[in-house]
Image 1 (cartoon, helix red, strand yellow):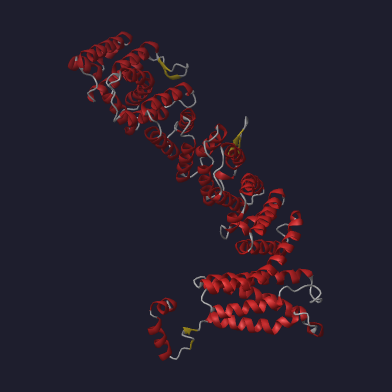
Image 2: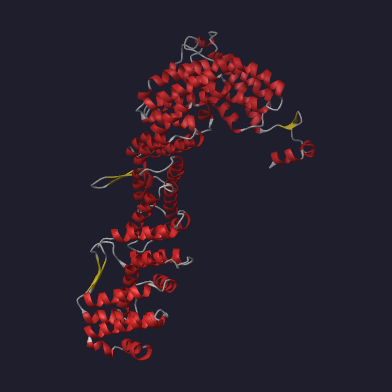
Amino acid sequence: RNKMLHRMFPEEYENFMSSTGEAVEGGTIRSEEVDLLANLRKLMNIFRVHCSGHGEEKKDRHIREYFYITCRVTSCLFLLLDSYKEFSPGDINSLLKEMSALFPVNQAESASTSKEEILQFNTSCVELMLACILYLTTALGEEEEKNQQDEQSFQSVIDSLWTFTSKQLKKMLAKHGTYSTASGESVLQLHTLISSIVKMLKLVKKERQILVTGNLCKTFTGSENLTFQKVVIQAAFQRDQTFLEYCGEDDKLKLLLFIPKMIWEAFKLKDKETCVLGSQALLSLLQCAEPLNTAKKQSLQLQLLPSFAIPTDKHTIWGPFVSLGRSFQSHMTGILHYVGQFSEKLVKSLTLCALHSDLKEELRSKVLYAVSFGVRRDSDLYLSFLSSLFLKSCHKKSDRADTISKHVCMSLKTSFADDKDALLLLGNFIMSNISTSNANVHLLATLVVIFDEIVREKDLASEEFARDLTDTITIPVVFVLLQFGKSLVVEQDAPNVPSFYLEAVWRIMKKAPFLVPALFGHLNSYMTDGALGLSNSVQLMKTDDGAMRSYIISTLLYEMIKESLVSGTTSRENLKACLDTLELYNAKIANYSKFMYIRDTFL
């Protein structure tokens, strides 16, 4: 709050602080951070003699403790510069000069300390000096002429840092296979070196940029050590886009095709963090790389399959997508928008994921829309995808079924030039692939709901479309109505067909009255044959109880009359023929109240 007031009202604020006795120096308020910087610099100058190589360190048996303190002070200075941005450029420039005079410390100059300790100190110096340079270039950025002079003076420091860092990094990359989570110090040093050299990319010439990024990519893609791969991903990708900015397109492609393999290996070892880092890096690469050609997109799709799901003859091999959490899932669904037209294999893999019971509905919708985007140019594959989803999810009432049925309906409305033809193709595919195991009222009623949604606002004057619609949807309508009639007869006004489904049935029949004669035909067949089946020999309903069939159909006809679906001469003739058939198979039906009402009142 004080800093904000100082920026908004500098003169008034300083006058007020002076009147209260607070220290004011150079027109600015001395903060705790500024005091801390000054004290740390003093502490550094006290102990730096033990790293200078002048021989004083040989006289003191506490040299290792002093060296350790110097390392810690260097780290504290770096953290201070990294978190606080209100220092005087003059103070930071002085600190940079002090550190430049000290760097690098080598083994000969400090014989009492180990190579590992010296490397740790030099690595901390690299971090601190880079922070100073970046701080100064930012602070002096508006003064162009002065900034150019500073950049020239920085160049010798940058060259020194680059020489040390690239040399050490080369050594550490050469032993990339030896890293493990147990070797904490070496892993941390590797991370620091890579982070530092990535920061320096924008400060060095193009030849150096290409050399470093190329070597790093080559070592990364050639390594089988997961710890090493994780460190590279963290250091090169997490902080900003600098590495990607200077990475060549060929190297980006190698990374794109390699990282999915790393994700799979990490998943097998239950290393969630590395999986998430990999997915984030993949998305960043695709966002900044040049657009891939078709062949490269297909190669990338093949590499991505294990991250989602791989179907086999016996079971499905699940990748990390369905279980690894929101961050990973968000990255992977984002990646799908960069891989072009989806292959059939990828569609099958994503279909399995979309049907997984553990997936949250919000994420399920994202997967569905990603697939719809990826197959939008292949209408046959698109309809096959929608049909497969429908058949595998809508056979029972669930949130998943609701999500998928809504998506199918929306896709038909928005993604096809002729949604009526797409609707018929979808319906025919579903009806021809229904099996005994999933043929139930939920599946067929949901299909009726989708048909109702599409044809509700359509012109049904076309005789060809009317014929095709009749062939496709009449049996599902009859099946739903028979189930409804059965529940009224057997369960006494406790229907097993939700009103939402029934409303869709009544609406589509009113919108398409040409369905009514076909419906009468199927009711007559059900009465005479005792079964209602599909063209693929799947039996939807079957009963040998002729009396029960007649009561169900009578009840159903009564409900149709209540909905004003029987009108005109043709309908009356069809109704009369149906009643005659009922009475032929069950003479007692003449005493059934609903049958009597229809015959005596309506006819």
